[in-house]
Image (tube, rainbow, N blue to C red):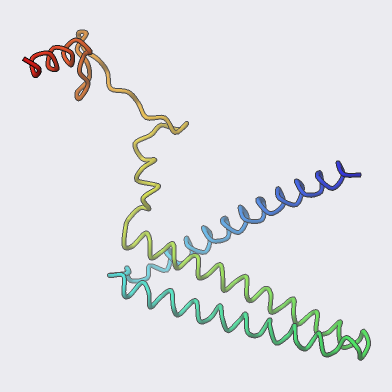
Length: 164
């Protein structure tokens, strides 16, 4: 029985990872759609904050609607199923609005990053690496070490000369 519980937990974690990946795809799609409309570039961090705050306020308004639907659902539970079914449908619609607002906020945040910084620090770091994430070593010509690397003999000689 304990093996079954472990398998269920692993399945849930994989499902969550897949969901986050799919949401990321939605964010990338929405970001592409936003950039296709060619909005004015974000000029500074203050303007970026204003854009983010505007979309965050929309997300909070959607969350407030979903919260109200949950409270209505709770009040209708003692009255029977007919009111609960309608309220569950309303809650579903509110949840979709929350998801859409959250995706739009993430898309705008991605726009702010790309306009202000061009690339993210992680993208800059990985730009110098090959596909597998490893950096290419510099070529050594004529037996000379690459720039910045000294032979052990040279280091020992410099240390010996410094002691005398």
